[in-house]
View 1 (cartoon, protein in one colour):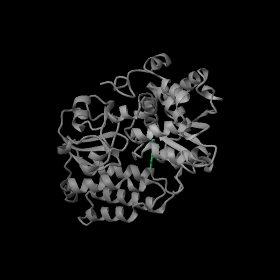
View 2 (tube, rainbow, N blue to C red; view 1 turned 90 degrees about the vertical axis):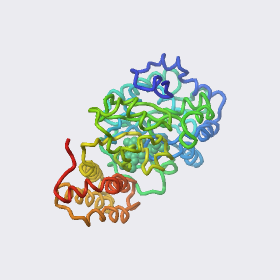
View 3 (tube, rainbow, N blue to C red; view 1 turned 30 degrees about the horizontal axis):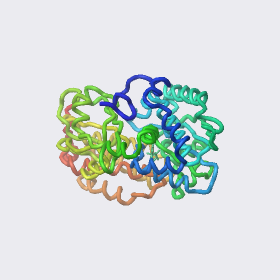
View 4 (tube, rainbow, N blue to C red; view 1 turned 45 degrees about the vertical axis):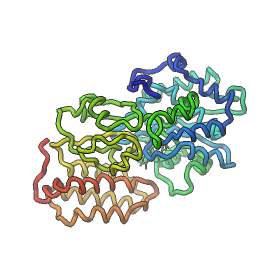
Length: 420
Ligand SMILES: Cc1cc2nc3c(=O)[nH]c(=O)nc-3n(C[C@H](O)[C@H](O)[C@H](O)COP(=O)(O)O)c2cc1C
């Protein structure tokens, strides 16, 4: 299938400037500079229905409007390539393979919100991605798309690279800003939100790599074209990450609304050992489990929500019939306990308590009453942190207990359903 971001819908090697040009590269920027005001660009993105691909699915046009509508200057754009979500590799592969597409999106975003500086905040371990983006910036400078008076207009843009620390919270937008300000990656209390008071307390549009990669195609081909792909509430495509649980791991760009079964079976080739699927996390470790009989759910924000989960940033986690959900839930709880930055007492307490309860159950030292405690701990702490990490362990743990109570009861009785 032809993709919007990856020309063939899958990774196809690094796209050179010439190859990018041949598929319309930088024509969106030329069009915007010649025929569109910054407000026109913003309105086109708004009309396209583009939603953030960094996890929350927030409408990009709305976020940019907050930034553009302030009177404050300077304004900033930040490309969020922190990508520390377990199993996620889409941002790295996008940067390595289609760097000009991303850069054109960054420049258009800066034009739309009136930013004079853009930061490319990229996971410090992503050496090839950083190199590819550096080469793209050097090419764009030669073409006059980065620097002073771009296209002869009153629009100048400076670009700076910033390595993202290897830390899960360092991808949270306000923590990203703290890092660029030279501080530790600790999320800020909100409001104010970065869109109006971000870097150096100035308006800052922070967007995920994949989100920004969608911008140039939308500006070139129009919001109506984009809305024709995907579903009414989730326009366009999404890049899904499949990992070692399937025969053909990789990233697959598919229109929103594609059935989960198609992704796992047709793209991924099914489970690695042909084992039956017991459960799926359709949006990484912070999404609720779906059971193996929900594989026909359509992969778009509303359908996955209606099925009881969330799409996150497109990392698909698969649990097969021989695996125990208690082990999976414990692994997730321990991840969040480890990654909680610790500054909010409620988050520190909640994530550690959930991991402790699950560890006890997993080790056969639990009691039935513990199964009721998860919901209480989660409800008590909901929303009490500076960032949404505090809300992340709830969906997988509560859905695990609800859907697979038998696995928990087996552990309470000192047994485990796992045969793997
Ligand atoms: C703990 C935590 C980690 C996050 N990590 C990332 C990340 O690595 N990359 C990313 O784009 N967004 C991440 N986010 C989401 C960002 O805060 C923000 O919503 C996103 O960058 C906005 O971009 P978008 O609107 O284009 O999705 C994270 C959020 C939280 C709470």
